[in-house]
Image 1 (cartoon, helix red, strand yellow):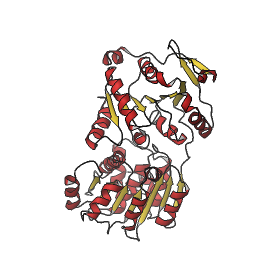
Image 2 (tube, rainbow, N blue to C red):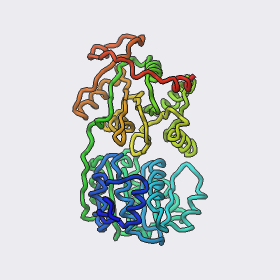
Image 3 (cartoon, one colour):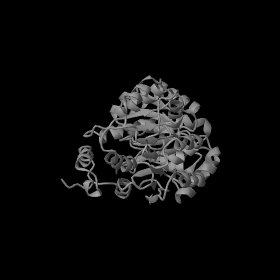
Image 4 (tube, rainbow, N blue to C red):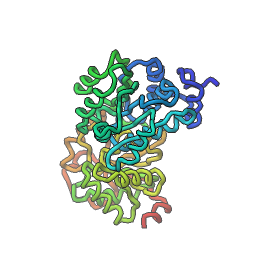
Length: 401
């Protein structure tokens, strides 16, 4: 049976598993990376999240591993959520094989992770800190690793994981295949790539410096003391299915969530100080529709694949302009449309202009009709009155009483 994926060199069983998941045509990163990985070459893949990167390395790795044996593939991820997401993807793709996979990450007990490792697995998804703990305690050896995947490497750099990553790489055999995926390639990462990889093939999939065309986005100037009032008013006037609210800080995320709950919204919260059970429940509840709102720090801005997010609201302007594109890219995915609102105070003006320089476009300033604004010099920056977003449906109004 010839499919677009089998034409890339994938076995029928793997191509069938992919087709069963509803994927008919490979994305650009998959079309370019799969043949190289199958041939055993090292790869530097430069691609944004949401481009099908996980399948680009997972599918050919499964084929190269063949049947069940020792721990031969390690995938390093910067966050627990991404590690879990990668393990989930592998489990779907290995459906018609006897390969085994597991995931290790901090914030939970060691028991199940130790049991899985001792039973024998082929593919391990891991965060650096917990993996090093398990290695030091003698529960995990990388001596037989044939394929090493370093994923979201720029995010690992941002989170200070580079020394841990180097220690882990040093414990892997020198004769291995290394796959390196990152959205950006700053000098520190280029240096790591030069040290860890051998004659890599570089695959660059259009660096996204601008939001997807399916996303409508605008700045909403407001004085700091009215930010929450404006957030609540925007949500009242918006017909949304699910919304992610981004905060710069963990403390801010908790405060926003509490106030939204008091206003009658069902809310999940994700940030680094929440324990793993809380984070897993928040994400699962948001995906299932139990929570209509997910309040998060930038831990949720990259990589997490959450279908059907209709709106993103930046309660705080991100300091890094790239994070603006990542954050609002949580909506408008897979050719659906989405809206993104960003609340901008006088303290945020410099960061807001950095975002416009980064995406090389002026972002429309809007004011909400009928909202009792306190005057700010921000409003002299050509803020256009915004016809209220689509009115909330009765269903949503009823749900928020």
